[in-house]
Image (cartoon, rainbow, N blue to C red):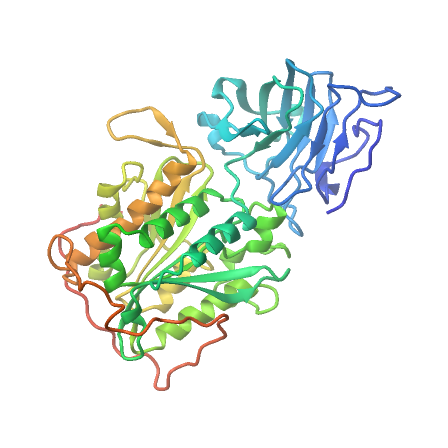
Amino acid sequence: MAERSRTTETGSAIGSDDIIAGNVSKYIVLPAGYCGQPKKGHLIFDACFESGNLGRVDHVTEFEYDLFIRPDTCNPRFRVWFNFTVENVKESQRVIFNVVNFSKTKSLYRDGMAPMVKSTSRPKWQRIPSKNVYYYRCPDHRKNYVMSFAFCFDREDDTYQFAYCYPYTYTRLQHYLDNLQRRNMDYFCRELLGLSVQKRRLDLLTITSPANLLPEAEQKVVFITARVHPGETPSSFVCQGIIDFLVSHHPIAKVLRDHVVFKIAPMLNPDGVYLGNYRCSLMGFDLNRHWANPSPWAHPTLHGVKELIIDMYNNPKINLEFYIDIHAHSTMMNGFMYGNIFEDEERFQRQAIFPKLLCQNAEDFSYSSTSFNRDAVKAGTGRRFLGGLLNDTSSCYTLEVSFYSYILGGTASAVPYTEEAYMKLGRNVARTFLDYYRLNSLVEGPLAPTPKTWKDKVPHYKCPAQRGPGNSHAGGKPDKRSQAHLKEPSLPTR
């Protein structure tokens, strides 16, 4: 990333924000005309760290600063995510920060959302009080929408960090997966499916009982992906909640592992995450519009996942029953889903079953916000592409969760999401698979008691260190095992 040099200039002479190409690096903001060494209260801004984003700072007055989001790399259209630090503050110093170049006009800032803040002595993220946050169209900035927030620095020795939402970095994911791997669980496998353009890992997790991976075993597969859009950090917390539950000793998790193979790619866009982009990869591509024809060199992570899914689809022993892509939404509350529309009425109605069951298990999930569509603009997404590719036993969804809050049923008050609340939604998603398979009569009884252990009956499954493109099976895809006819739910008229 390009650095801003230490200077006594305010930066106001810089022209449009279109020239922003890198993050500020220990950038000292001094008043116009000031000479000499910086003093306490001359703020130092920095975003040259993992997932950081702040492209420019303008000194407006002693108390006010205009902040410019750095656009996604190689794509100036997207300017939403920010993540930066401020140091060299004075105790009781009050400031107003104006984030002046958002690329979106609609925002949850209109509905009470507030930026996140933490400091070195208070390392837990918390939201700035919403009464101190304002979102408005500003004539001084080309009538762009501006988010202003007031803040008081209260500890001189602290470094303060501000972010659009709870950060979840590539390094955090790697530490989390390393810890899981060290537990040596025979039902958990981590593979290297491929590398990003900048050679970061594309991890693939397999969670299931070893018996399901024997050569002669038939597999029911649930495939889950997250963080194709790097700034949508809540999706990583939801995904971690799913993983935590599936590897736990909870009896429901044990039953699911005995009957289902879970494949999880927790970070589809590791370069974008590392760089602090909001929507795009290193090369400026919105990967969730390139499922139809991903390039092995421009979109290697997407290409690797698609090749694996097609390989599984062509395997007569594998039934790919679910694909769920996890995202975060910048204008809506709650968790909800997008599904596909089909001419086959039974298949169309079957799409409604899982979100209806999830709505019963998760207080923050809204079925009324869930919608089924075939919008042309979404044609290149994972949900749409795989919904058209896979056969009628498969269900493909986008799972969305709000960047801000959820509304409890029967109330009008918004409950802000926490990291734990996002992970709880993930755990509830995992639980819902048991309810779904009960309807399909795959799982019988309250918890479908299973044998004492698979370890005495099957060899320990050893996964390869790296996975390459699989071999297609001759003869194409045979007819899949038919699922039970499910008549209980009915869709609202659309």
